[in-house]
Amino acid sequence: MGAIKTLIIGASGMLGSDLCKVFPDAIKLAHKNLDITDREQVIESVLKTKPDIVINAAAYTNVDGCEDNQELAFQVNGSGPGYIAEACSIVGAKLVHFSTDYVFDGSKKEHMESDVPSPINVYGDSKLLGEKKIIENINDYRIVRISWLFGIHGENFVETMLRSSGEMDTVKVVNDQFGKPTYTMDLACKIREIIDLNPRIYHITNDGICSWYEFAFSIIDNVTPCTSEEFPRKAKRPKYSVLVNTKTEPMRHWREALKAYLQERNI
Image (cartoon, rainbow, N blue to C red):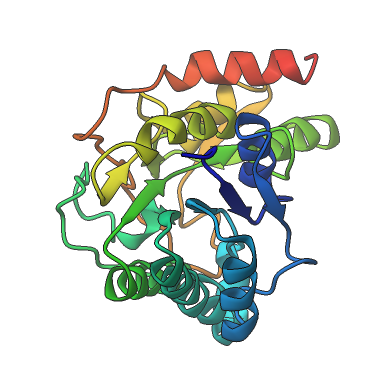
């Protein structure tokens, strides 16, 4: 038996960058190396590398942008994962793929892995299509639903708050949407465990629930709460996008993760 060969797709993104730290020997493909919406290119790349494990962190994650670019959203978040799953099936590789809390409509305060998805925006619709395409094309998959990501290597809510705090006297943040902030490094480390678990859907987030305002207040002082109606966005957001993890041991609380993030940022 040789060493296990891992391929990371979407290696230059916020999550992908931390996955590269956790899996330093992995083959790393960024968007410039691989367009996951090109089926032939995807299959050719996977056949060429012959990995044992493929971790797909490539996605179109601009929630409001997905409303304006629906075709692109469904290609990247829907069709692309299906092509990756097809390629993994050909070479006999395990697939780890990241989905989202936004596959749910937020009508329940908490969502378990077994709950029936019902997206309310294009981003959620496109990510749900990706889940379905994976399940259609491969049996050996681990679909990991995640939420409210923040990490060193990309634009995220924490960075937006830090920047806004310096630019505005008061920063308004909605206090009627609830979820679980998740540190990309904690998530990346957790994937080592997920790889060895049974094929299925997993909910993986940092522990603890908060509103966007509560999250913001833990980052900056000059923040004030507002309603979603006061802060309209192009894409409708679920009121509750709390993912319940029933399959693995919980990760540390988001407040601890945020502290580690800010320390890494030297703040």
